[in-house]
Image (cartoon, rainbow over all chains, first blue to last red; front, side, top):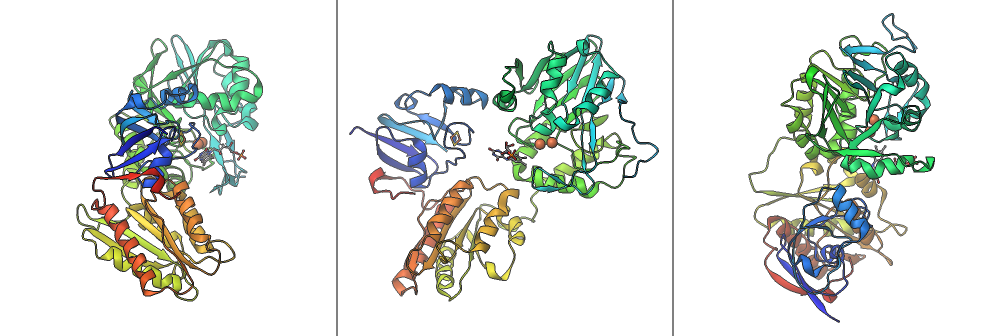
Amino acid sequence: MPKAEVLFEDIGVTVKVPAGTRLIEISERVGAGITYGCREGECGTCLTRIVKGQEHLARPSVLEDKVLKEQMAGPHERLACQAQVLGGTIVVRP
Amino acid sequence: MISPASAIPDGEAVELAPGVHWVGAFDPSLRRFDLILSTANGTSYNAYAVRGSEGVVVVDTVKSEFADVFFARLETICDYSEIRAIVLNHLEPDHSGALPELLRRAPQAEVLLSTRAQSMLKAVTKADGVEYSYRPVATGDTLSLGDRTLRFISTPFLHWPDTQCTYLEELSVLFSGDVFGCHFCDQRLFNDRVGDFRYAFEYYYRHIMRPFRSHVIEALDLLEPLELALIAPAHGPVLRDGPRDYVDRYRTLAQPTLQAETCAGEKTLLIFYLSAYGNTERMAQAVYAGAEGVEGCRVSLFDLEGSEPSLFVDLIEEADGFVIGSPTINGDAVKPAWDLLSSLTLVKLRGKLGGAFGSYGWSGEAVQMLEDRLRGLKLVVPRHGPKVKLIPTEEELDECRAFGRALAEHLTGVANQARVVDFADLIRP
Ligand SMILES: Cc1cc2nc3c(=O)[nH]c(=O)nc-3n(C[C@H](O)[C@H](O)[C@H](O)COP(=O)(O)O)c2cc1C
Ligand code: FES
Ligand SMILES: [Fe+2]
Ligand SMILES: [Fe+2]
């Protein structure tokens, strides 16, 4: 299975993960500072900055796009409960 | 109900400033609001209308049961065809309740609301089967009524994600929504005429605004520079006498409740526990000892049995992290632990560090249940806490010490040294 590497800047930990994993699942297991509410891409609580490797995340769904817009998210922000890693190296700042 | 001489008769609007009218409703018999607030003398739903040379704007509506009073007042000052826009500062039903009917009567009116309110508008009107058109506005956007200008100021989370304030520039009137409001029903309307509503103002702040303290501070930064002749909130007295005092009071209330005692850069960790036979207590002491040894972390230990949760709320608000130890009793953590956690809705927990531990007899559900709840409350739970079957051994107490140390190091940043781990090696949260 293809692997990706995700670095959480707040705790300095890099996690090797199988493709398809969502950022929130990784973050909560490793204890990084991403918090969540609905886990369904609706409330925007898990909005997270992607410092590097945005292209290695699956593109946002229509729902995520809508919520990102409503939250006035910047171009490098994603919902951690939605964003799935595809491969490569991704750096996030919770 | 006492009806003072200066009470406003039903069916009359009250002029607050030239062309600015109060068209709200009184609800004197309400005794509980939103399930969580007591309202000793009821509340009011304040709605307003602003007339400019190019039309009328309605700011907020009322709870649906009070729509008739609202429309009767509104009709005394304008014709529905004159309404150009409806500004919704907040979509909660106590303010949006009469919106569908208002739109039926004034279909030409444009609905203006904050960006975050868009999906809420759909949700509060979806049962009507009608799609309303609306325009999202953000801080700095304005609406001109000819000789009158309304400026929008986004104040998210005061009280819902959608909340905004609207400022009437020419007259320095702030339509503040729930902000600066309170549940206090007095038909004399103005703050210099009504009874003593200070407790209601403080109570409202504590229950509605305090959980969003950082948002309150951001909002105050936007509101304080405004010139203020009058604050027109969505509940309670209209603040025409000394409006600035209420803004200042919010600034004071948004300060930390406890005086800062830690040195700059020092982190604070609180350890709470409950213990019937002393097993969880011994674990708590070991967690405490482990954390205590970490430089830069101030650690405190409390037996929940010896206090009541409300006393710890202020302390937790100021702490960087807290841990709860509970034995498993009848397949669950014990009630004081849950009582503590459910008293915390008044404060911001997001991003604080959390943890749980406890002794058990055969199934030991408590620790996992507490950890799940802590995550649900938006704490970061970086470590699985120790579970010990019945009486802890010296090795098991070592594990507790290591757990305490790890949490303290997580807080002080010592633990955060670059390392690489495999997802498969991380245990399920
Ligand atoms: C004081 C208050 C706080 C609320 N907080 C939240 C919240 O944090 N998250 C959420 O999804 N909804 C929140 N809501 C929205 C309610 O869940 C929503 O209004 C719901 O429809 C109420 O259901 P009910 O009619 O059964 O009371 C809150 C509502 C109130 C009144
Ligand atoms: S947790 Fe609600 S959007 Fe991700
Ligand atoms: Fe509200
Ligand atoms: Fe309200």
